[in-house]
Image (cartoon, rainbow, N blue to C red):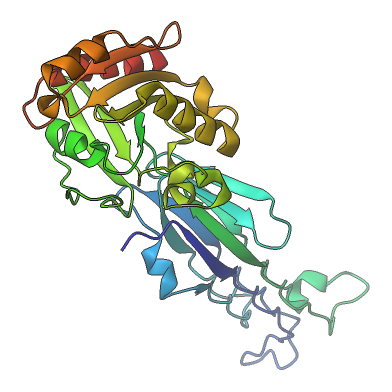
Length: 329
């Protein structure tokens, strides 16, 4: 199951208390102070992990609490410090403070770490309070409290190119053709219910990641259809590929609707480098093909005519996609 948002609670450990203790050895019945300091509480650390691609685990475990440091001991021994705990999250996860809504961190590389809650320092034992004027201090301090936060996690998938189109425009068919991804494919709208990522190997040492999101419909920015809840997953992409069914009654209108939906969601999305692909060319008759060739899009927008079912135009489209990614890099 794909889950792209979650709320969790984290709390680091308290520092251990310092203690009051006196040196007691044979022939030294009244030794001086030797109470040790408390240990440090455990930290809570967020770590990005490329093996994860959903926040599903946080549906079942929502609290992450580190252990407290141990209290100090006699003979001026410091208490044992608690080990940190690591909370693994998918690459591309934005972490916000649930109360202030402030972004705390954004982990975009595998292995990235962020100290989200620092463990409390240990308290001081009475050995530290000795002085020439106070050789028998009966003073110690408690350990510091750990930190606690409620956090909101939001996953935004990392991909080079985002596929944008109406339901049943052929996005899933295309991604299954050019990559090893195997999304559900059927001849009805909203077959794709979750985002899919596919790694496209163009040539040796040349590869890129494509994201297929559920289809948009007009009014998606108002909450209609399924696409609105997944549009955030193309905010990080370097480029966009608009896919439009060749059987559409008004292809240019469809293109304008798609651009407008992106613009309404995030005004910067339509500014990304983009390509248009007219899909399902295999079912177009000769008259339709002639009509398609007369289409004119805004200056600078390259248009490709493809059929994922017959691989017609796929090689040329893949090369154009790579060139967009290479420019972005």
